[in-house]
Length: 201
Image (cartoon, rainbow, N blue to C red; front, side, top):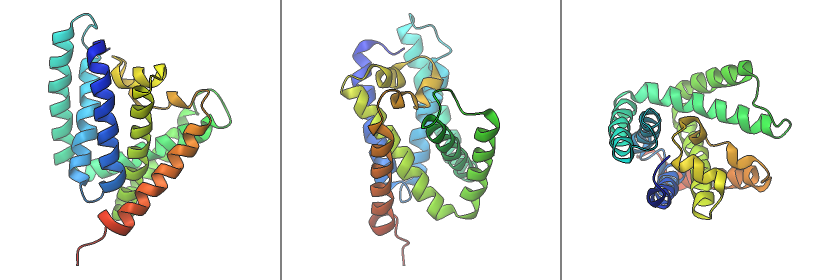
């Protein structure tokens, strides 16, 4: 877990990175890949260091973040497939959470991840716009909840357990979150399709 003094700035950065992804994800796709690569790399690396070792955790997070950003930036097509797979997994979790409190079956997550990855490669522009809009919207919601003091969302921004960053926990007991996510994602997709994601002539 990040030291307490770093949790609020981390939440602000997560909201800002989510806004970039949500409203300009297609235009700045390589930047978005780098941002999410940094976040996941930092969380993976910092989870391997003891929470009492603050300097070691911060150093591991920075190093892991830089490696993750580099991998996602240079592996452009792999990044597109991973974004599609991530969106497929997100749909599986959010959809399943509406009917059951447990995690969805592994087969459903795997199938939807594969469908998302294949779809992302076939319809790159639209999949990039939709996936960045909705993943950015979700990231903004998690960061916003953390800024507002939501305990689960704060863990998602500051925990040493990387899988809590895979942020489905704020759904618990807050039925408005999926609705806000869909509305914000649709707005982000509309902004990208109409303004920031238009093809250059």
